[in-house]
Image (cartoon, rainbow, N blue to C red; front, side):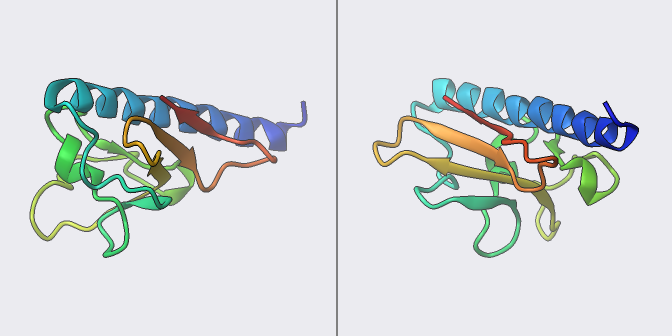
Length: 122
């Protein structure tokens, strides 16, 4: 493997870890509340605080996950801990969408590299 590819593979591995953590937190939310977080819609959305984004932080932090993970290319810090507080803006570099029946969800990484498809669903 070329050293240039190694860094991209490391970042893709971190993305898989991060979206798996989001999936686990979402699953715990669903088990606790009986439904998916209301900010997850049937349209693919960036996870963040922007107007058209899915603000999962408000649903998940700090009860189901300690902090929202951020894509390795978005900079530091690697997580956003206070994103649930009023007025805090954030973006993750990850996407989320739910199925029409409202029972399943898929997370993805917008910035995945080297042609990798970084997605996870339940």
